[in-house]
Amino acid sequence: MKPPVTIVRDAVDEQLKRDAERMRANYIDDAGFTLRVLDALPSAHRLTPAARALIPLACSALAAIGVVLFAGGGNFLIDAVMDIATGSMTRSAIGFIAIATLFAGAAHAIFREA
Amino acid sequence: MAPSAREAPGFTDNDLILRVLRDDDRHAFGELVRRHQSTLRASLRRMTQGNFALADDIAQETFILAWKNIRSFRFEAKFSTWLYRIAFNAWQSGARKRHEELSDDGLLDAPDDGHLPADAAAMRHDLMLAMQGLSEGERNAIFQCYYNDLSHEEAAWVLGIPLGTVKTHIMRAKDKMRERLAAYASGEGAAA
Image 1 (cartoon, each protein chain N blue to C red):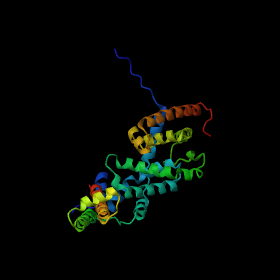
Image 2: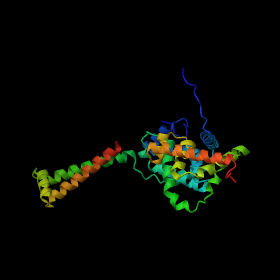
Image 3: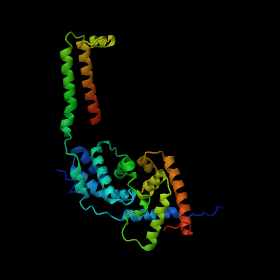
């Protein structure tokens, strides 16, 4: 036979719930609050979705142009990596870093949009 | 053409948030503000111990922060819970600066939620006094779980503390309040 269930009243719990319910039930009239918030919102200087989509495209295009410009003899990547590895800041090395940064920027922008 | 948020109040919070995310729709955000302003302001009035002006300032700051950071809303929590988290952080970040401005007996000035019967007013008074004896963490946990009606898990997220800590705070807070309320009831140190 199961022992009788004893329900213990938690007076503090009940008082808190009652007080909280009273607080929530008391509707606070908007009285212009929403309008004040909307007026205080920062101006919509955020980019439109179309403009946002153009950022990674533009970065990728610039990076591609850079690759074409710097890849004169076709050994651009190898030269650049070798130069960076040996610590010499040649034209190839600087170009490689710039192009890599552009690609990273594009990747970041695409990732954020996703 | 889809109706604007202003013309379609039947939209859920998530529908409105999606409109804000997709089109930077201020009307949709305005509808979100209209829906949640009362509960948030009431909650903040309690948090600020009845300082209506300060509560409204924090509420406004909360909605502006929500607008600025709406892209970080991941639909894992309710919008209202996310607002409580922003509001709590906004209140906390300014709490130290304001600390000196609040009088020790500020808790007694909890906002009047309409005309209370005498016994309810007395109960409120005792409750506020009992809450004064709580630590800040205990008071915050009680506040989120009871007055903001959050689960322990949601309160832990809002307060940025582990779930176990919330449960401990609630348990200790209620023990302390029980002792204090019993003392008031028996006439010792009664609420003057």
